[in-house]
Length: 118
Image (cartoon, rainbow, N blue to C red; front, side):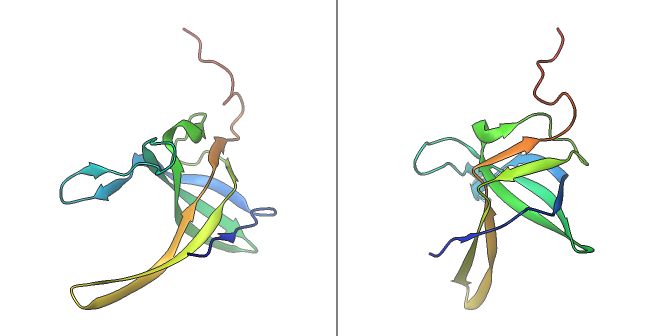
């Protein structure tokens, strides 16, 4: 499947929904993992604002590659963001869409990389 790099330069990105564990099988609660590293996959809903248009996109990222506190409204950087078109058929219904995957999601909030006080 073709992956299309997404240029986020000039866009404002902020957390719309904090990270949540991605499920491979929602009916049975099976957690999705990265095929290469084996790390748990997470989804982060990100508000993507550019040229006066805003859209919320769900971005998949491996759990260890999320850095900083990602509360709602936190500005973030998406490293290595790619879009992958997909299509499937379920119960005779064709469905299609675009999935987004990032190498890393990093908080840009002031002090995000500083250790928390004990």
